[in-house]
Amino acid sequence: MYPSSRFAVAVHVLTVLAWKKEEPIKSERLAESVRTNPVVIRRILCALHRAELVISQTGAAGGSRLARPPGRITLLDVYRAVAGGDVFGLHHKPPSRRCLVGSHIETVLGGVLDEANAAVERVLARTTLEQVLLGIHASAAHPGKR
Amino acid sequence: MYPSSRFAVAVHVLTVLAWKKEEPIKSERLAESVRTNPVVIRRILCALHRAELVISQTGAAGGSRLARPPGRITLLDVYRAVAGGDVFGLHHKPPSRRCLVGSHIETVLGGVLDEANAAVERVLARTTLEQVLLGIHASAAHPGKR
Image (cartoon, rainbow over all chains, first blue to last red; front, side, top):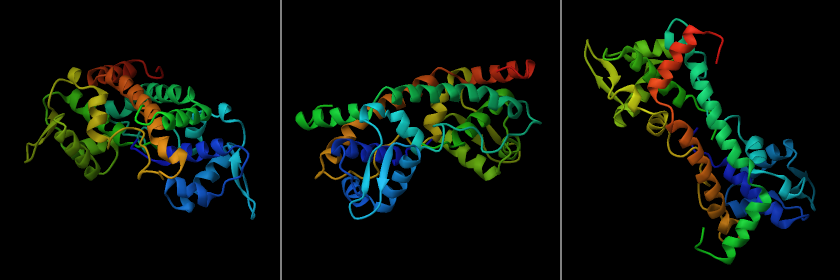
């Protein structure tokens, strides 16, 4: 539930790949742009590879590139690839069934949390990596505007 | 961004206090209902006390109770009391300004994350603790329905 930069870093990495098109980009170069350790980048690339959002090749001429056009990758795809699950979780272990609240809180709160998660997913689903890249170019053309 | 049960536990604790009305409830009893360590409960009560959602008294007859009627406490109040900030965060440290994407990703992604956070807040703001407690009673009366 607390702010994590993992999603932001994944979007950053994929936006660089979208910008560079077919050119395979090495994790060291992505790490320089994000200003983090290449190990962090490789861990995120691994998750993105599992989700079939990037293709990574090893070797001297290796690197990573997008597995499909950036207009066909939404921020929800990215979120699902790197997040452990829903934004909000219920209790780690079931509460006491001997208490009225403990017996029913998961049912009641679960409904609200499902709504919150769905609201986040709707926002993320309507933005593609292509739009992020267009936003980057627009921001570069008009710095100071948002 | 990843599921945390801290919010769920805080709502659970406050719903027990709403159910028990004016009666001060000890952290040990709350811990039994949640099925966690009283230390976890006391840490959450401390955050809820700071946010002026509960009143806690020490001593033999001490315990915690709600600081105001449950109809005037929303899940957003609870969320703000126990969460460290927004659901989604940007990079931990600023990305490289020497890269086009690094220079502008925070501006572009920040807009999307603000929208996602606002969507979550809207969902949480429309449910009060009183409604959660009513939901608990409804679920107890009709088990199996959600």
